[in-house]
Amino acid sequence: MIRINQIHKSYVTGQNSLHVLKGINLKIEAGEMISIMGASGSGKSTLLNILGILDTYDSGEYLLDGLKINRLSERKAAQLRNKMLGFVFQSFNLVSFKNAMENVALPLYYQDVPRKKRNLVAMEYLDRMGLKEWAHHLPNELSGGQKQRVAIARALIGKPKVILADEPTGALDSTTSQEVMDILHEVNSTGITVIIVTHEHDIALRTNKTIRITDGNIKEIITNV
Ligand code: ADP
Ligand code: MG
Image 1 (cartoon, protein in one colour):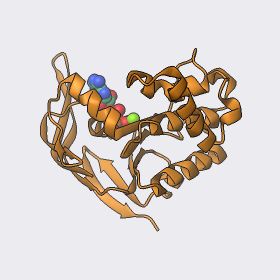
Image 2 (image 1 turned 90 degrees about the horizontal axis):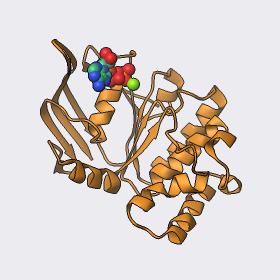
Image 3 (image 1 turned 180 degrees about the vertical axis):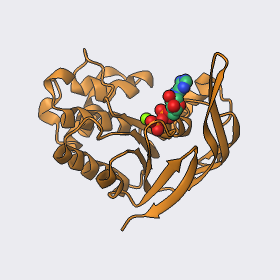
Image 4 (image 1 turned 180 degrees about the horizontal axis):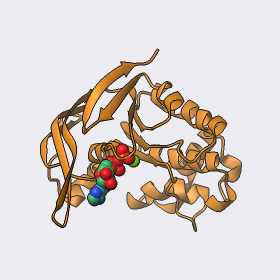
């Protein structure tokens, strides 16, 4: 599903250049559930953003589902993201003035699906997350765990092949974190590849494989049993 060969990425600000990724190689098969660990600032989000076609890389090669991802136009990148990828973030990134149903339906709005239809589909996804009764509530009326379930429903509504989650449990207590991991497991069991950035050990242990980034490189790949 994902092949990354010798990816380098530096951030240049003024006269300073920060070499964050120093020749990353990574192979992720369809249907895998993996975690990416590493110290704060080690480049986890940078790597995930490259995988999500939200950011570019300087050199190397990235193949997503056999497709070469390199210097795409923003239009083409958006098209691929819509078709292939779902995103989950630590801070949920819900639209505060839209209710749960409208937030979940948002990706379909951008695909020009009529309102009635997209709300109907959004309700199905909310139902899957056990949140049907919360459909008409605004994000600030939901708990952290409920917000993340709304965000996961929104990530799933476009039928992605890969879910990219950047510290999805970073803002949640440990019980709620495990519930979110239960959901991500369920998602993975439907065949969707799940990639989770985390700095929490117990979260990483709930994925099949953990990749550890140190000094801009993958230093070990651990198989979790
Ligand atoms: P992590 O997610 O592992 O904490 P990041 O990938 O966010 O790390 O960041 C890696 C390094 O790159 C950090 O030192 C961070 O400050 C720097 N960095 C991240 N994004 C940018 C940016 N847009 N411009 C400049 N430096 C950045
Ligand atoms: Mg990060």
